[in-house]
Length: 124
Image 1 (tube, rainbow, N blue to C red):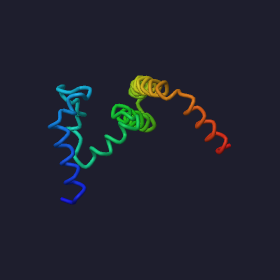
Image 2 (tube, one colour):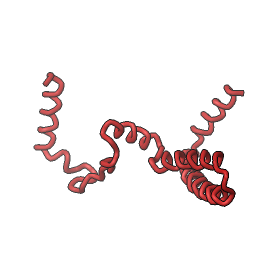
Image 3 (cartoon, helix red, strand yellow):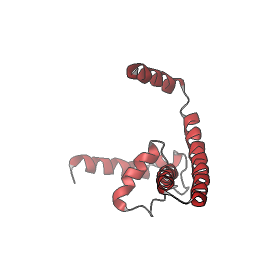
Image 4 (cartoon, rainbow, N blue to C red):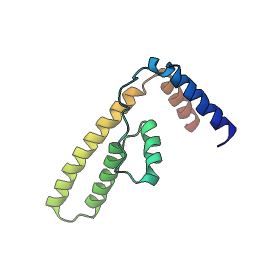
């Protein structure tokens, strides 16, 4: 252990003994952990970063399913199967657009609009 770790641990221990953590919100309540147990360990950090950035695993899964169904439709020769796949695609797109509209409403602040305008001007 280096010196900064020893100092940090000492300060945390003193704060705990003085009861400073008892004043924190949520003291004594269980911590709500992200359940990433089904995700391989080497991908957990990436999933956490995506989630903190506003992307949900469901969104990524739906995007992948939409791409797969679109690919199946392109290569499908049976009209009945193609119609069924098109209906499935519509349902997936509806769900995906619903998720995306919820996310857009969360980032509907003037800061994001101003940033969007600046990017748009640079691209034009």
